[in-house]
Length: 462
Image (tube, rainbow, N blue to C red; front, side, top):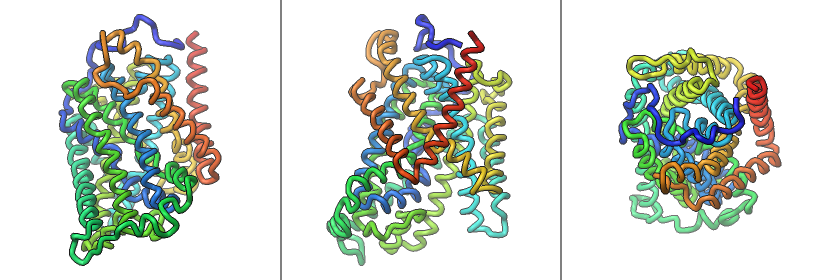
């Protein structure tokens, strides 16, 4: 192993990887839009409103701005250097093999454990519709279906995600449209609420700026998933243009969807009526008299969970394939089918996924809870290394491309540093908060373990 990348090793160009180029621009665009729209928004946002009140709008602005900056950083590096390992490859080029190893394996573990939550959540909803089919059978069905889809061709993954993301985007657009009409008082039997819910019940910041901070801690991890589009870029016909267009089209719209949705919710309903674990979207639709609101949102959440499950199977297989390419995982994972699919990498990822699903079903409050805590804050560590990598690579990208990058990070290097400071602040706040401290400590221990393994590998290679 080496501690830093060879100076002569080019960042841009190079041969394509032996993977299919089956993803089209429409797949990439919808991946960028739908990748971060999930159950965390549709259901988890209720917990944020409960702790921040109407100030959740500010919480989402802060968390969304951080996510946008990270997405722009990954986009800049991926446009210059598309690879199936995306930010793991970037970290290796910027900081050395220890960084690529650590980021890649941490992200892989995060995905294969979280997919158990998604499979179980979707199964519980399906079990509510058809109680005669047990939850474990639904989990098995979903895992088999999406394993098969990912073993076939990358186009199957792209088509699944295109339609999943389309449904989620349409649902949010309709929700925003209905909400705006209700706020203006033009819907039948609905009076314009004015500012009563924004300024009543303690004001716009009923719990002060401390509530806003708590809201950030509650919602920041809902933005996880934006990374998938840069991993997928390596399997598009024109990686540079695909990732550039996907990032540009997604970054502002995602923030609009999140912040706009929260603005509608807290304008139409008193924040004190929100309950953690219950969807504020259902509450708004019930308030507007939309028939079957609960079932409508169950369908949307169901699709969001299956979408995340599909994306995590894909992203985890590509990440571990990239690790194998760089000698950081068993070489057996490099086997690629005639259709350009890393089937062994897919199977390796879902085998661990099946195991984590069993742990979630059998021991949700013991073994699986510890595993989930161990990866709960890993996303922030990954984002931090992404920012450091972008700081290190930007000048080299400019030199080797003979000018400005195809996709540029805004306000470099100041906004990159600002993002790093914000991530550090979130980690400090999590450490100070009794509710989030265990998750941070477990995740810190898991990260330390992976870093220790990377260090030992470096010593052995010397």
